[in-house]
Length: 122
Image (cartoon, rainbow, N blue to C red; front, top):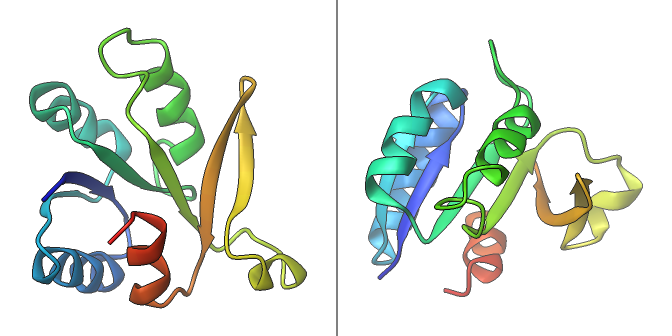
């Protein structure tokens, strides 16, 4: 079992994803805004962060930039969940995004839960 922090503003997608992850043995903390996730991430130090990119008030990329500057949190792996992947890239299972020289895995929305589980090693 791993602790996963899911940061997703689409409540339906977030609930479906959380339910599937819990059914597969993961502990999931769910937040609908990046700013609200910081406290939970600092307190619980998850094994993985699943981060939406386009969210109100603070984007996922802004949040990851902040997390990457915290010595206690910068090594937590992040997978971005995004609708920003182009159509041609949707065929690529693990597209990537680079922020401040660090490459992060991405998964295009909409995604199949099986794709997500494979990416997190389940």
